[in-house]
Amino acid sequence: MPKPAPAESLLRVGRRARASVAPALALVGIALLVLEIGPTHAQIKLLPPEEAFRFSARALDARTVEASFAVADGYYLYRDKLRFSTTHPAVTVGAVELPAGKVKEDPFFGKVETYRDRVVVRLPLDNAAAGQAVTLRADSQGCADVGVCYPANSQSVTVTLPQAGAPPGPLIDANPPKKRWFN
Image (tube, rainbow, N blue to C red; front, side):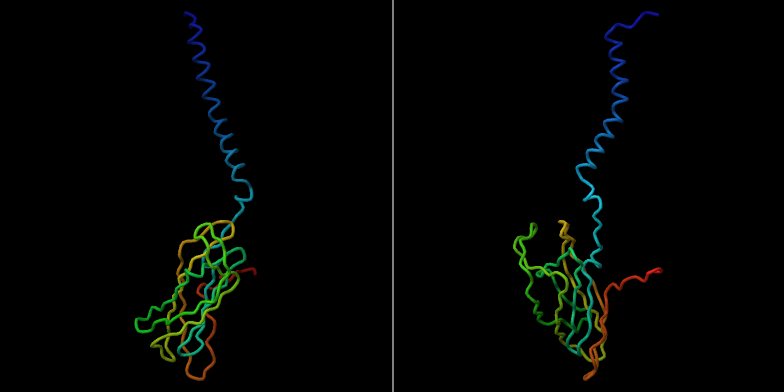
């Protein structure tokens, strides 16, 4: 059998070397990607929007509902993204006066007002009656301080409007915390 020419021999060696180097290069690429992302980004665990922006409400009287958001640490709600409505065709939410928020220079929306910790809003109801069950819908949008913003989110609760002279109804959480076996 004739000996291969030196050029053919070099081509075979080059192919074998490339075949064994390709997996090593892929591993190096993955390692560099992990280093680029870094351990701090890999450990971030965002809350679901219902936990980051926990919505609840209670009926104060036959014409007023108190709505509130408990905003988790490290998160904020946009003031101008809050909207309230009812699912009952005859009962509507009147003019809502939102409390002032804290001014923030936001990378997504520019200069905006935001809420942290807790925000409470009184909602006047038009055409509501004592004893009536009303489903209140709250639309909101917020972000996490780590730079992640959530899409618009809707949460609902059903409250029963108290009779005249009765105390306010109980606070109803839109997403009550789940019971745990060992806590």
